[in-house]
Length: 247
Image (cartoon, rainbow, N blue to C red; front, top):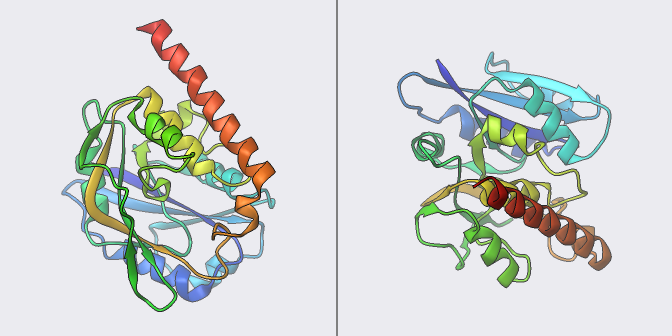
């Protein structure tokens, strides 16, 4: 069986939301010959995810010292056995068929894919983002250019990222910054390789008061935000120069 590894960093989760994430994964239908594994990696050692989630041999629990979401995701990456790696936040919901669409997209020269996401509001309503690019391949450099032109806001949702495991490892996994680690990984992958945007909705991105990246939170504090964006941009420039030198 070929495997897609779904990675979820867990820290002080809402039990209901974590269960909903599990149910959205458990209901996925995969192509013949494929299976999924869920690397649930706790940021700390409280054991809360083990207590919340049902017994399922496909759910592989792990834990480590409290180190933040990027380190937690990378510890899960070290345990991942799949040729593809997909992110799933602890409070988000996969839509039906998204894993199958990811598997279909990442082949040949396409090394990573993202999909359309809808914001899942506290009242249960879904809100669309109007900046999605057209569906189809994304040549190297396209996402980076759009990100720069849009005041460091991505044209595709980094939480929906699925990529080849070897590419994730080559890039050092999720970028070791306090927030925007998924943006750092996506930008780096988009510089080195062809990606894909799937216009079918693949994720319901939950917005709720306990979320760490809501507008107005510490995630958007000016000095730290600028430092993160500067580092992500500089790494992208270095990767572009390296890619040009080997062509």
